[in-house]
Image 1 (cartoon, rainbow, N blue to C red):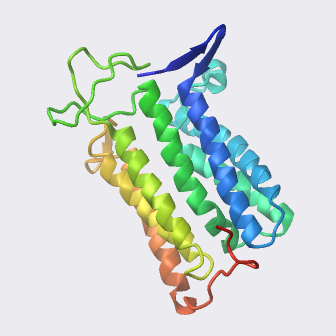
Image 2 (tube, rainbow, N blue to C red):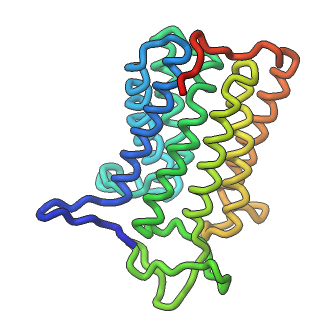
Length: 255
């Protein structure tokens, strides 16, 4: 594990580095899509900045609600960043930004979906490098891994499911598929498909992770995932009658 990279007197946290790279990659993907629609590419990094600010606030509030810890120190700490809280906060901030730009419709949601999946995949690389406790339950499987040098270390000799690796691979693949499908459906359908696929991935990976069961044999993340997947199905079904109205870019995609 490499929780830190030391460059002389400078110490870089690998988790923070990967989060920063995730936002840069997301911005590049959104910029490419904006260019295809003939929109200013600088909007991409305004969108990413809004998502980062809203996501940070949402992630901290979700963690505080989950843990019951509303202390000033916890709210200002660099730990306790929960994905679903960040996703909700980031979505709200991007919606406010899109409303200000006069582009708050299904297209903005579709435009962000490949970037969301790619950013999540890169972020999980940070979890793997830092060994921050997002790994799974103990296992004797040949592909299990130990995190003895992580920020949340495993006991010596104990192997666990390397769930960050699984999530990076699965969400990276989803990002690729969503990008390839970006012009296949009418606005909104791609976002619905993203909700279904990403929620299914998180629902299944929770069976390998160490999160606490809260109700009906499911973790909080699984319950939220089930709700988001249902929302995604509802979006796709509600838009199916106009499936031929595709979201075509103004200019052809560049290689």
